[in-house]
Every structure is written in structure tokens, then in C-alpha cells.
Image 1 (cartoon, rainbow, N blue to C red):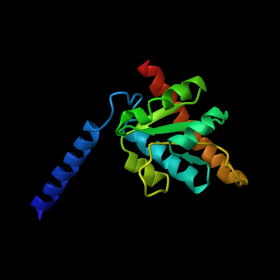
Image 2 (cartoon, one colour):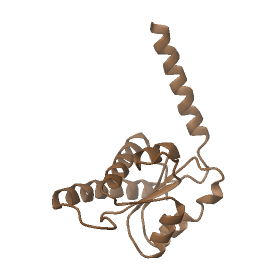
Image 3 (cartoon, rainbow, N blue to C red):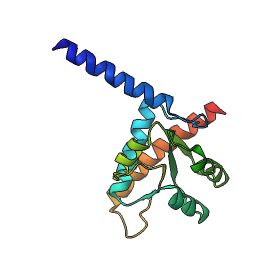
Length: 157
């Protein structure tokens, strides 16, 4: 019985090692475990309240229209050319962005089955209104993650 759990642990470590090897070289700033978990939690909450833009096309369109938010990009995209222009657009529009380890985790947090390259987390829903309590909670989580991302970015550059 002990060997089963050891085998599972080694299998889990092997999966994580493969995830790390699949990360693109331009994936900076890359979120650590804690920030990644907090970011994916924010994405999940934004998806519940319909405050999320999914996919490269929607994210680029939103950024060009002047909408603000937090851009979360998957680090294991292949070919990398699909998303190389997104960080540049984010920097020009002064939108904070961060890379997470896997597109599958990003899709699960965004409530889709299809792996997602990038998402844009907004504080206000595209249609309708949120309750004041829900709006406040989403805004607080957003501000905390955005502060952590800007701190990570400033330490990087």
C-alpha cells in the first residue's frame, strides 16, 4: 500500500516536471504556485460573474477597445507565435499581465472544457450588474492579485 502512494507521488512529480519543460521561454513574469493559485481562483470567480474574456481574439479586441483588467496568459502554448503580441498590447495599454503554467488549468478556472491561451479578467460584467457585495469581493480579489503581479513584474525588470 505504501508503494502505491509512492508510485503516485513519482507519477505526479513527473507530470509537474513535464509541465515545467513545456513552458515557453518568453513566459515572464511567470506566477509561482501561490500567485498562480490565487490568480486561477480570481479567474474562476470572474467566470461565475461573467466578467471574463476568453481566447486571444476576444482579449485583443477588448484591449484595443480600451477595456481594462488583468490579462492571464498560459505559458505552455505551442506555437508561441499565437500569443507573442498579447504582452506588447498589454504593456501599451498599461494592463497588468501574468503567465500561469498550463492552458488546461486556465480553461478549468475559466469554466470551459477547451484549453484557453489567455483570458482578460474585468471588474465589471459585460452585461447587467453585480450585487454590491459580490462586486466588492471581486474587486478586492482583483486588486490583491494585480498588486502581486505588479510586484512580481517590478522585481523582474
